[in-house]
Amino acid sequence: MKDGYEFFSGLIGTLAVMLLAAAFAGTTEHIYKYINQKHSLKCILIVGFCGGLFGIYGNISGIEFNSAIISVRDIGPMLAGFLGGPFAGLLSGAIAGVHRLFMGGVTAQACVVATVLIGLLCGLLARYAPKFLKHPAGAFLTGAVMEAMHLGIVLLMVRPFETAMQIVSRIALPFVSVNALGFTLMISIIGFTEKLRGVSLERERLRSELEVANVIQHSLLPTFDARYPGRGEIAVSASMEAAKQVGGDFYDLFFIDKNKVAFLIGDVSGKGVPAALFMASAKIILQNCVRDIEQLSDAVSIANNVLCEKNEADMFVTVWVGVLDLQSGALTYCSAGHNPPALIRNGKSAFLQTKSGLVLAGMEDFRYKTHEMRLQNGDVLFLYTDGVTEATTEDDELYGEARLIDCLDHTGAASTDAIVRGVKDSIDSFVQDNDQFDDITMLCLKWNGPQHEA
Image (cartoon, rainbow, N blue to C red; front, side, top):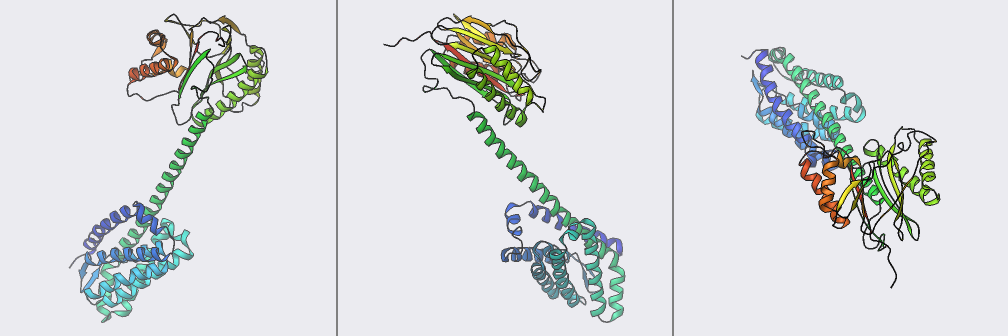
């Protein structure tokens, strides 16, 4: 004769297998798809059949005592009722109950009635009080009441009464507690997998939205090819790679008039979506100001004031902007806290060493100064953000300005496309597999000299 501890340990072993199967089923997409079609015929049949299989396994692995089968069979119909409603619970209870009937024993008929009734009642409870059943305390109380009812039906139907009483008195505690605990754990597993699936779906939604945002952000940047800028006086290439799906770096090139072109590069503080939104605003404001205001210093100063007024997030942006006369090569430029560009002339590279102003959106009414120089035929200006020089290895070694100049010295006579690719390849070779920490953006412009119509 098995004592209460042996009953308890035997039922727990069976329960562990059922919990494992439930966890696997709960994370299987096809099964979830069907059971999520609440109370459809397909859902009722699938859930009822699966619950019946759980019940049959509980029968087979049950413990025999005084011609009775002590098992966790009822968890299957309870779970089927919870997932598929009263008809699924009824179907599951009927499958498990009929199987139990063929196994025989003094409690066979009582178990059939109890199992079918439990499946039906749990289905009704799930339909009319789902929040109660989803709560762990509610699930445990439901399981305990259902199993107490099961034992009550055994007492009512099994004869002689002394045999029924002997069975119930010996198994009541492990039988009720293990089945109630098992039902609670299964409800908890289902709730956890639903939350996990919800988090996964939300993450996938955000990833998709960020991919769209990345496409939109790149669409805001000009594409340079044979059609644009479409002037023989200049050749332009650019590249922008965000450290995240979207970033705060940007570049731009646009015509002020027939013979003057403005070009710029910027780097917004921060990363991700906030930086990308501020970047879009800064780019539009700068383009409007530079295009509409004759003096570059005034244009940058006004853009700074506009950005300060709309800067509730306390962000800022570094910018280098230049205006080039395509016929004379005269260049007027202004820096707002940005890295100095490199000038490649006659195959040698050097940074433009001029004093920079304050970052944009840093302080209202700051006055910016412009600088002037004249480009020679074949001169190249290489603009970049600090993601280039601050690219790091796993040992936190910076790519640095010296490596950039050395790379430009080796690629300076090449096309603007080759220069941009060369710098990117050099950075990749330097950092190897280390993760990109900052946005990496480059703009390369070559002045070919004035073009005379034939």
